[in-house]
Amino acid sequence: MKTVIVFLSSLVISSGLMAQIFQTSQLSTVIKKCYTDSVQKTERLAALKFHKLINEYRSTNKIDTLAWDDTLWLTSRNHNIWMGENSKLSHTQTEATKYFTGKGPGDRYNYTTANKGGSSWSGENALYNYNDNGSSIEQISETMAKTAFNQWKNSPGHDQNMRAPQSHSHGVAFYLEPGGPVWATDLFSYQRFDKPDLSVSKELASADKTSPSQNINDNKINTEKVKKIRVKDAVQLSNNLLSALETNSVVKICKTNKRAAQRHANYIAYSKKLSHEEKKNKPGFYGTTEKQRMMKASFGWYFFQQRKTPVSESVAQIQLTEIPSDLSGLAREVNTALDIEKELQGTPVTSGYGVAFKQAKNILNIYIVRVERIKPEIHPSSELSSK
Image (tube, rainbow, N blue to C red; front, side, top):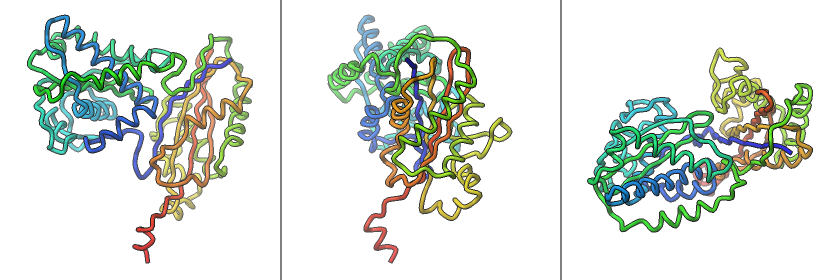
């Protein structure tokens, strides 16, 4: 028996997929991804559950319910990413900061809609907390929605926004920062363009069918905690898991990739936080970015190949309470979770894994890094232009 929790994030040098802001022209792509990426699925489901809670609250107070507006949701989502990535709870974004989309709510709405939106904002609520408890997507999203609702309800100014009769639509969004807090923003509008949103009700009903056994990254098997794992067993497990991962890989294993992956896995184990960025003067530091780590691991040789083979890095954390008997099965689960994003526009040509562990009481945390070099697709247009 084992407990497996995989927290997944992926990064590609050319496109930066770890955190991303979007505009309404990309709305359908973003929503579609909410049902293929388990973290974003949890965030979306929490938003839909909150939408249901706030309308029940308004109905109880004999106030017209709010229509759901995906453009407001996307605006709120962008603001969550700014707050999370800049570690700042605020209604005002600072210019020239990462993920800046506009100083105030109206500016951010104009950014999201490319100045083509028709809404005027009537209020905005924002928060952060650490309430993402649960063992399934449904449970975690339920906790996130209820906690945010109660947090705002118990704050007079925020509660006033939730009950404002002049608001007729809204879009609330959540952002689960990797290894950090839950950020939430709810943007309200005076306008109401749609009839009562039956599509949202259908989406919520469909999403609520998530299996209770499915966790935030679809890779959890429940078990009770058992005795503490011995260090020598943990070391052996890490080595065996590394071998199983390499055996399970369909991509050629490369020493350079392995070296870069292992050094970053060691760093993550020291810091206990999933990230693609390393900070200088911290234990295990090897290189700030995945590109720098690959350069160092290849003794500079990667410099001559970087244009032809960009690098992609995935990181994951597994929590074990007992040594699993089926390492090949565990390796398959991990590789599934570590699958590189489909938008890579290329094919992995070499791969490498790094495995490190850190014990916490009776739980063994295993940190896994996979580094792949990607061969870009060559399109006919690019072939012609190079002649």
